Image (tube, rainbow, N blue to C red; front, side, top):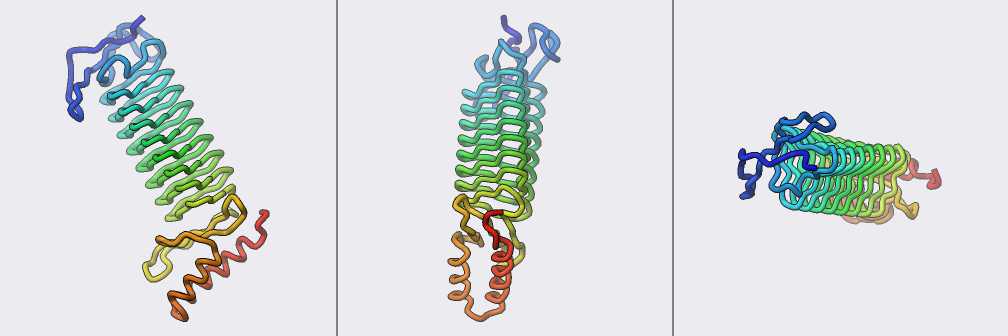
Length: 267
């Protein structure tokens, strides 16, 4: 039995005609006769579940909303995206391409989930955060502010990524680890706690960020600008490029701290 119908009220978004929906029966928190958001076609919103689209939210393309999922605010769900379970997409959030958001996940404010990304569990993706590529974010994680999680990266457990931090490539951030500020985590990083990462802002000739972390093989890597490599490789690069300059002294002092920080690789 249908739970809504397409009304005559319509609008065009991205050259696609959308129709406002109206409930034809009461279910969950929705009353019969209540107006909802916008869809392109009935396949965008399942009739056999309690999922609903509220307010000015829009779902179109081949996107599907089902389960107990809620789309609200000015959110857009389109492309081949799927939102289901108890997931909530709200605010000005965007979910598109082949992205999947499900379980109790929430994507709010101006956050974006796209590409082949999966966001699930009790995850919150909010503010201006972006999760994309083949990234997976799940568990009890938070990804917020201007944070980016992309590539084949995975953030899970009770981890938090926020500020202007980036997690990319094959990096793994989990446990109770927090990555924030301007930290850049990439390659094969394996960060299980705060003991596995350290970063310094406003360093070097360009006043950038130097990030150092453990990898999944126990090695220590450094990222600084376009440089990504081992601690030893970075130390050699500093000595070759900056020789005995003040910049070299600054970097070498930080590297000594990093060596001390990661002295016991088993912790």
